[in-house]
Every structure is written in structure tokens, then in C-alpha cells.
Image (cartoon, rainbow over the protein chains, first blue to last red):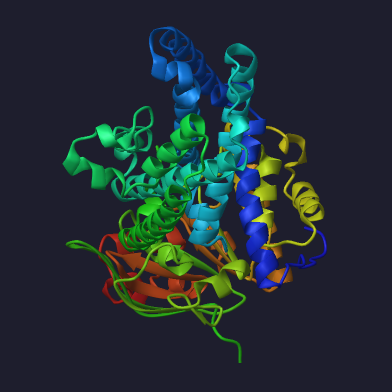
Length: 278
Length: 252
């Protein structure tokens, strides 16, 4: 060992916090950058979904006056549902990466805070969603003459609301895996489909049984998909749905964040941070 | 007078009905290399987990580098680090990527220079750009050690630091760690089953059994007190329930 010089460390707490978030984002982007199959996998399913539902929409347009007027409803639904699904899986997969690689103890023996990790997971989920969705959305334009971008800024609000709700679900399923171990891993993939029937992705919430309608409207996603149909069919922006979706998202994000932090603290009590892995 | 690097009082950890650590009082003076010894299930890893803040104690207090770990853990984490063969770095990331991520987490100002310096000192430069999963276990141990030294910690916790290393490399690493502790004025707490390693590395040892500290002291003094020639013989005495006073050779 040559002469010792202590390496300089930043001291500004805000800068340090931002650097830790960036470090974790970079950690997950290294994974994507290093694997072409992973990148292709991100795009593959959204494109397949878009192709199948686009063909179905073309068929229905010839058979139904409703679809003749609103050809983009199914395609818009499938693309936006994938935003929520990708938001969920983006959080959960990044979390599972740490479990699979037995890296949790290293991470939390470092100055990283749980909430900083949460911000990094959300950022990565957004990047993964964009990588997955943009090619499918662009391909839909020449193939089906449907541009989801025609929704303009409404699309941005739909995108962020669905991403936030998907992330909230991802945080909860990740917390459940932290609590019950990798045996509960399938929750990360399947958990979100529990709310798909209630979200009115392809149909109006009003067709649900009366007693389920209030339950559906307690989900931000149902307001987003109602709002999407209003834009595509009536060419109007339903601000009431938008505000409700945003307010509900704040509630769900708060609850999921609190649940995650509570289970994280419980993991420190139970010793699971030291033990978890494949 | 300096605070001890670690001061624990009545430290207890219970997992359901199992008492993993049973009210230990522990003081590790600053600037020393201390071995934490004990058989399987003695409570070493649980104790290290609590020192790192990865585990919450069921009872007791613990201060690291003068900070209360239960209340101000994040004040002291940038000043400490750890390495264990039972905890991995991500396998799909290269050694350089892993070190970069952790250097950022520890808030280092010049990340590249620090990695380059450690790569040279620990002879890992030739495989810095290979994925961690493709490295031999000995190479992975050296990368993990580099990670644990990124922030030049004042307190370094090491669990089996030379596991998977050939004797030559293991000896070289031990010398490096002794040099590091001396030059940085750092405290090292080393949990190990390798008694030769502990004898060479540590000036003091703490012996644990069934969650309790059963003996401690300077390595040479402990060997002499038990009337033995090596630390391994002392370890076997303690593991088999013989105290220094029980041993006829010790009384002579």
C-alpha cells in the first residue's frame, strides 16, 4: 500500500442525496445498457399487443358503428394500460434485481436511504416505460393511422397518472416480497391484473355491476381511461376525471410509500436484509 | 480521549424464541484490529448486522464512531463500510460499474481517481471491465474488498475477509489491511473462523458463544492465559466449554 490519502467526500446533504439517487438510476441503466435482449424485451410485448389489438380494431370498425366513430379506443386503451403495467413492473423488476443479486445488505449498509431508492426506482420505471412504449406508439401511426400523440398534453397527464399508480402498486408488491421473500415473487407480475377489470381499460366503468362502480372510481386508472375515451370519442378533456385521478394517486402513493417504509423497518427488525437472495 | 469506535451496552437480539445475542457489552477501541470469534450460531453475524444498522436490536444501545446507531445511523454510515462473502455485488455489472455505483453512494468527489488507485493497490485493474459474475471467487473477494475501502472507512467490518483466496493472496491481503489500518488510523472488526488469520491480523479478540461474550483480550495474553500455543487451541477450549481457570496448564 502506497501513502494514504483520505478521498474527499461531498458534504452538501442535498447534493449527496441527488448523487445517491443518480447512482441507483445509473446502476439499473448499466443493466439495460449491457444487455440487448433486455432492451428488446422491453419493446417486444407492447409492439405485439399493439399489433393484435390494432388488427382487432380494424375488424371491429367494419362491423360496428361505435368503433367506426372511435377506432382508437382499443388501441389507446392497450397502449395506456401498458404504461401502467410497465410502471408497475419497472419498480418491481428493479427491486427484484437487488433480491436476486443479494445486494440489499450492501446497499443499506451504505448511506443510501430507502426513500432515495424509491425515487430512483420510479425514475427507472419511467425510463423503462418510455423505452417500451414509444416504439409501439410510433409503429401504430403507419400501421393503423392511429397516433396516440394526437391526444396532445392530455396524453402527458394520462401517462404520468398511470405511471404513478403503476409505481404505487409496484412499491406495494415489492414490499410484500421483502416481507415474504422470493416465494411471493409472482405478485410482482400478477398483482396489477387484479385491478385491470375495474379500471375500464377497454369499456366504460358504467357497464360494471352497480356495486362495483364506486370501487372502480376509487382507482386513479378508471378516471384516466374514462378521460381517454372522452378525448377520443367526444373530443373533450374531462378535467373532473383528471383531478380525481391526481388526488387519488397522491393518496395511493402516500399509502404505498408508508407501507414500503414500514415493511422495510420490519425487515431490519427481522433480519431479512441480511438473509434475502436466491 | 477518543470515543471507542464501537460501544454497545446490553445489546440483545431475539428472533422469536431464539436469543441470538444476549445482552452483550462491547467496546472496540478506535484504531485497533479486533477479531470477533465464535462457532456457528455464536451471534457474530447478528452483532455485525446491528453494528451496521441492518438489524434493529431487541434491546440495548449501540454507538458507532460516537453516534447513536438507532437514531443517527445516516450520520455515521459514510464513515464506515463492510465486506462479507455472504453478500454479493450485482453479478451482471462489471467490477468498475459496481465500484462506480458505490463510490457515488458514498459521495466521493473524484470517483475515477479513487477506483484507479484501489485497482492498482488491490491488483484488480486487469478485470475491472469484466462482469462480476464472470470473476473467480478470489477476484470477487478482492473487488468486494475494494468496494469496502472506497470511502477509506474509519471503521471497517470484515466477515471472513480472505475466504476463497489462495494462501499467497490471502497473506498479501492481510498485510494490506494491517497497513491500511495503521496508515488510516482505522478500526477493523474482523469476524472469522480462520484462527491463523485472526492471529496474524488482530491485536485483540472477542470470543462469542451462544450469543454471549465469553472471553476477550489481547491475542497474545489470551493464548498465554489459556496456557496454549495458538489461538485455535484457545478457540477449541472455549467451544468445548473450558474456561482459562479450568485448565491445569493455565494455572502453572
